[in-house]
Every structure is written in structure tokens, then in C-alpha cells.
Image (cartoon, rainbow, N blue to C red; front, side, top):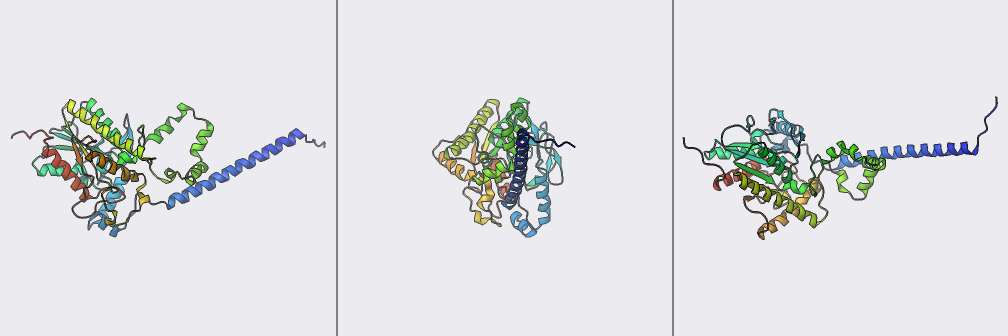
Length: 391
């Protein structure tokens, strides 16, 4: 048999092929090792959603029924799902459970069936993020439920209170959600906005939402990014390099953003204040009242040593932005620079007794009740509700 003699060109091709194969295998191995390293680092990071034993639940909820709140926690986190919604990008998904009930319109119940928009009587719409929605508590223990209960105790059981809180919403999305209801012919008598925490959590302008990355990836083909850009976006090696380079966002579970500097903090404070001015102008023009609640946060005017269980700073993640934003807004308020028409400043509020936070950031049933009472008192004292018709 005649042996084919290799040529320099053939040997060159063989060498190049061998080198390329070695490079590809090395990259695959490096990607796999980087993925394992990232998993190890992420597994060691503090949990944003903690797991508690019965003794911890007793102290966090001031309860003798830890098994009840274990079920509430499991259901409220599992069913805090969102679905696509035009303009706001997402809203709460409908759900009917033992402790969490959300209607097809995205309204959470206050201890019974969620009210419908065409129900008779004065209407109070409550907008906000996960603290307004009521993560970690049952339907009857949310802030809007406390508002309804306090109004009823004051003789206004004719008022319908709508829990329109959506996990991860902040003032821009809430303003748009209100506008969508108004253009659909659904108008409240009073609209309440519970804000501050999530506004600073999303320290980015122009505005982005929790669904921003998801929608960007869904529409990525339209922009036709380069193959290199796409690979870098997905690469474990690139993410590990970013982490080692000091990018804290790689290790966080959620889609917020750190404020880069004090100018960024000031821009977020201005965004919140501007949204309030726009909403108030809309309310005055269309004939309803607006109440803006500067909500309490554990990063301002709160001694975290009071917590039954310790919370380290790194567990707060992007919420640490509010530790810089709240003092700025407090100073602006003192200087008369904030929009104060309809502003209910509750940043220093704490429950009179018992625990305030059931996890890193969400309120306990006692704290929800205290906040709801203050909101209801403001609605009544400032005449923000139409008078009750005479019998």
C-alpha cells in the first residue's frame, strides 16, 4: 500500500486544529470551573429570604402560632408571581390560596374576596411595592387591610380599599398604573402611594424595572448583538472576573442597582419627588385626592439592634441605597424643597410594641397595623374621602 506523504500545509492544518481544540477544551473547562466558583460564592452569600425555626417565628411575628406564619410565608413568597402588563411591564398574577388572594385585576384581598372596581361606595387605591402588597403576612394583615379596618372602626365601613401593591414596583410604575386605570374610566376617591424603599432600590435613570433584563433578553434578537457581546453576557468567566473586579451586583439575587455616588442618590430622590408632583397634579385636575406615604425603612431612624434576629449590612443589598437617600430627603423636607402637599412622612415610625420587621425589609403584622392606622387617620382628618350619605 502506498503511504500518503504529509505536506507542510497539511502539518500546519493539523497543528492549528490541535491548538484550536485545546483552546476550546480549556475554555470549556474554565467556564465549568468558573460556574462552580460562582455557585460556591452565591451559596455562601447571606440569604435575602431567610428560613426560620419556630422560636424565630414566635419572636418575629409576636405569635404563639409559628406554624401558621410558616404557611403564610411559604405561600406569600411562592405566589408573589408577576405576569406581563403593558407599560408597567408586569403586575401581580391572579391567585387564590388560604392566605393570599389576588384577583384577575391584580387586587389583593383584605381578608375576604378582593373588591371589584365596580363595587359601590367610595374607593381608596393603595399603590406600592412588596411592603404594600404584604409579603410575609396574610390578606387580613397587610397595610391596606389595616386601612380598611381602621376606617370601618371610625364609621366608614362603606369605603372600599384596594390593595394594588406589586412586588418590586416603585413610584414611576405606580404612576403609570394609576394612569392606566384612569384612562380606562376607573377613578378612585383617594389614591395612596407607599414609597421610598423601592425607589432607592432601583438607583438607575432612565427608569428600569425588575423585568428589564427579562424583556431585554426576549427582544435581544432585534438589536442583533455581536456574538462576542452575547458570549460575554452569558459567560461564567466574565461574571467571575466582574465579581473579582469589585462588581457587587454579580452576587445579588435581585435586579436593583447600587447608587454610584451622591449625585445618583439625589437623582433618585428627585425622581420620587417628581412622580409625586405629577400624580398630585393629575389628582387635582381629575377630582380625587392623593396621599404620599414616605414609608419606614430599617436603614434610617431605626435601631437594627432591636431585631429579634441579627441582620448584617450585606443582607440588605441594594436596600442600603436608602441609607443615603433618606437623610437627603429628610434634609430637603426641612428646607422646604420636597413636594409636601399630601405628604405623610412616616420615615421615623415604629410599632408601639413588638417587632417591626419579619425579614430583612418587610413589615410585621404589628407594623402594618401601625402604618395602616396612620394612613386611615390622614384620610379622615384631611377630608380626603367624600362624606357618608345620610341614611
